[in-house]
Length: 226
Image (cartoon, rainbow, N blue to C red; front, side):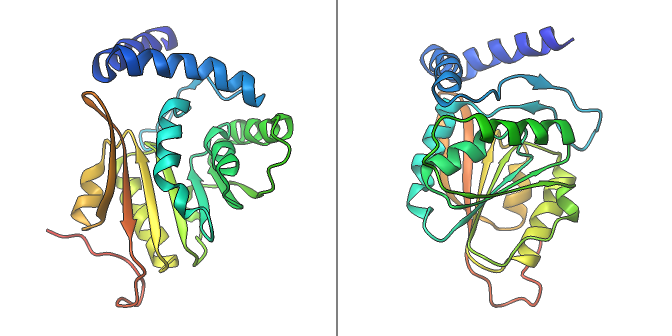
């Protein structure tokens, strides 16, 4: 079953991204895993209808994402929602983010993330990393300028709950990086501003959203727009 899923994603990527971006993505997986001394590849299916399978975000795409938000490293906390084996957290720490949070429901994946940070080769990185095993809807976010990263970790219903939860706790300026944005309509319905779109040929790799500091509502939640 896993073989057929991976085969599907291989040809889907080739078609949507085009040959150049596709093979750049594949080469990056091998090169950067060896360079950084971490093991974050692989595929793990989910037994939940709400939470999606584990698959690491591509290094080639992450490099483009972090180039787009790099000016925000100073003073912003970085949350990886559904952090898996820790690849995105590692890249965020390497980019310069000092306060990192990895929130993951799967205990096995979270343990692998911790091990990757112990084995990684760039030892000069100094970051405060908090690993949390919890359903994101049960997590209370701190009131601080933040970047939330999501690689399509759950369905539209949970996505809506995450946005409401995060923005009710945190009224400071926030950016939400949404890779493989299948449920971007949730953001549109809430009137959340698109800051940047990252594309590869026919495929939207990621959408970066900006939520300004909010002083107008008591709970900070942006109401759905009908």
